[in-house]
Structures are given as C-alpha cells and as structure tokens.
Length: 152
Image 1 (cartoon, one colour):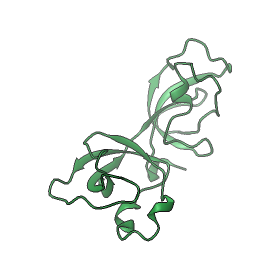
Image 2 (cartoon, helix red, strand yellow):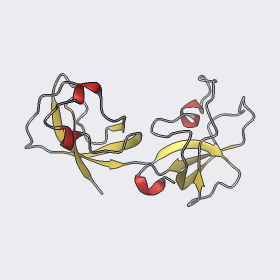
Image 3 (tube, helix red, strand yellow):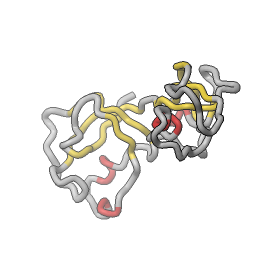
C-alpha cells in the first residue's frame, strides 16, 4: 500500500530507497509537517511514483525544496542466525560486527533494521557472501519485512 509523503527534490526519483529517520530539529514549525512526517522511523522505503503536477515546496532541511512522492516499505536483506530461520518466522540481527571490510558487513548491520527488534522473514536467500565469519557466527542471508506488519 502506497503512502504519499514529501521528499527532497534531489531524491525524488522512482526506485530510490531511503531509511526514514524521523523528525529533524529544523522541522519544528513547518506548515508541511503532517504531510512530511507521516512515515515510520527506522523503516526502509522505496519511491514508487513522483507526483508530476505537484509543486516544489520550500524546506529547511532540503535546499532544493520537497516534492510529493508515493512510497512503500521494502524488505531488507540481512544476515540472521541460521538456527530456526525459515520463511514466516521472526528473527533479529545477531549483533554489531566490527569487521567492516567483510563482504557480509552490510548484511550484518543493514540500514533500516534495529538490533533490538524482531522482524518477519519474508524469504530465505541462502548463504551469506563471506567465506568465514570472523565472529564464528552461523548465519543465513534472508529478506526481512520492515513494515509495521513484519515487526514484533
């Protein structure tokens, strides 16, 4: 289900993905707050449509202003503990990983996922891209639902 929101004109392109982080200090007193701050903080979204006839509105956060777009929450690819991992079950991330050069690091600490929450597994992708986990974790690469229905 699409949601109409406002986003910076430089980002307003179909298929652009972003993680909504919530209200910024500069949003205080903005007349467009209700149209702009209508997403779930910490959730990853994809722009599905840019409203072509909508005007560009001034914004204290975006120097080029903001435009109306339609967005949908998207799943996030992540490494989770392999024990008990199957589509439809709930899982959480194993925890932070200091090995930023590892090919799996972006999946062990993905944007749009919190370490302290559980998410529903939408799909099992398979083995993680690393050959060896330096923390000796047994991991499975999955797609996690990030919308409100996929969280615990």
